[in-house]
Image (cartoon, helix red, strand yellow):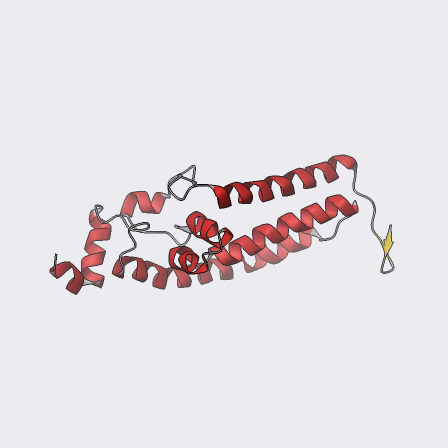
Length: 171
């Protein structure tokens, strides 16, 4: 197939089927997440940082935030974890490209180039996630966000008393 002066070979049937299967699994998973009950445990593995410290990691609350986005409750999503917005854009965008490649029977995106772009910017993205995590953590401790902070843990309780001592004094 010739597009814009460049020749793009057709994808083999097995690659097309795999791309379609992955895309449909992602879209199906998002649909199930959107209709699942908020009380349903959606993460198969507990967060290690949360289990040890009672504190949320940069991604804690992300699944619940994604469910809130898919339900149209953007305020709740921002409250739980604003990183769910760019994560969903990345996930849906990737699935859409995979589905498009399956339908068009050709590559739309140079996956090695895209992965190279991400890997070169990985450290910067990691630092940005950590920088974002600080206000997320402080807000979770000050509010406190019961969904994200386990105040039964002595580490979380100790940090909470340092961050918001006036709130704990009234209890």
